[in-house]
Figure 1: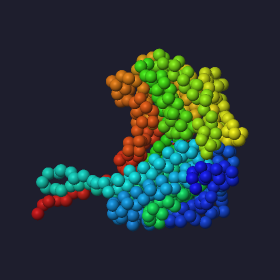
Figure 2 (figure 1 turned 30 degrees about the vertical axis):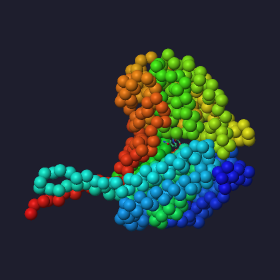
Figure 3 (figure 1 turned 90 degrees about the vertical axis):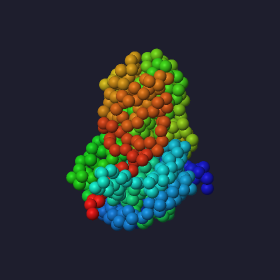
Figure 4 (figure 1 turned 60 degrees about the horizontal axis):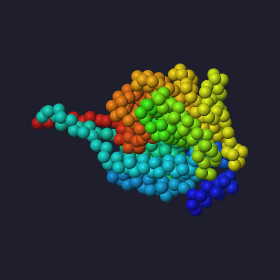
Length: 495
Ligand code: NAD
């Protein structure tokens, strides 16, 4: 079956074949529990399947199973770990069609976006397969009386709390380095996107990951997520989601002094100077905010424009935004859906509040539907111009296709505006002046900066935030740090 066949089958039946309804614990899908929850297709605003709501006993079993399997896995040779992780990458690619369609139906994104997520997840497994046999320590020179060196040891059982905007790739970016480092995994996907983590866990086992090493428990964050955060057997917790839940998770993990990686929100700026090409800036800003319907922690949700190019950039951008046709992700639309009715309501509330403050909307500003079906949870691509630095549309993460535009005259002003929120995830600078680009890049209080391109970079580079965008880094070589502990060993050379 081609991906179009699978998509067509879903669009005509409203059902997806063979979705796991239980948890994935100790190498198998468990019997579906009596407590279930419906999962919705955001592109149709209709339920398409049910999944199990995990309880204490499920999480307890998953952590116990991971703990048992980790005792064996930490001693598996690095070369063998490398071989298995490469198998995972191959299996993800072989199953890309099914995984992508499930992701579209569960999350609301477009098929092209989901296919990209599967490919980048396969690459993450390849990248960390290559790291598994290169996790060396270093030798340290203490003079002739001692021989000293460091080793990197696996931390043990790791917990992964996953959001709904990138279910496949957030799972992969935590699980791949954890396994490469010799750790075990318990993952909890978001309650609106439970399925791809279960399917990926099954594929991991087929690829040769030992039973029990990777477990997935579906259910509510406040139940099984909180239980995971509080459990002393979890030695590293990797959380991606909102700032408020991240703080809550940090507080729950604190009594056990659990290691923590927090990947929280953002309000990332694209700064464009007067010497930048307006076409190129408008194109960068378009993809920065409208990819994945703006539901990206690192979305370019603020456009900070030099007054000399403001009119040109906004004219191009508004015209392109007006032409976007949002529709069900399986029908090749320009933009997909908003993940849940709850989140659609949050976006609308932000934009309604801006309108009531008299905001200058260049386009968009309201909820909409798939024009073919009259259904679904969609928000119009929205551009709000000429905002003051303290406007809530500049300060708050809206997490939707809503771009807030600010204007500036001097470099100092641009830097001040760009750093002027409580977030610090990514930033982008458009200018032909290399010196200025480097000055501004170094002045940015954030985890990554791209110059003359918004989505520059890749999984080989570390990714993470400053300020309330979180701490710790994922992806790249630094992504392994969370999953290893460094031990120093010193030998006396005395006879
Ligand atoms: P959330 O932070 O509540 O959910 C993220 C994950 O945390 C989910 O798996 C959820 O089940 C889990 N969770 C929720 N409560 C928990 C608890 N008490 N203990 C442990 N785990 C818990 O996010 P949300 O409410 O779904 O989305 C709200 C906002 O979060 C969005 O508007 C957006 O600003 C932000 N967000 C950011 C990202 C990101 O990539 N940084 C992703 C999704 C959402």
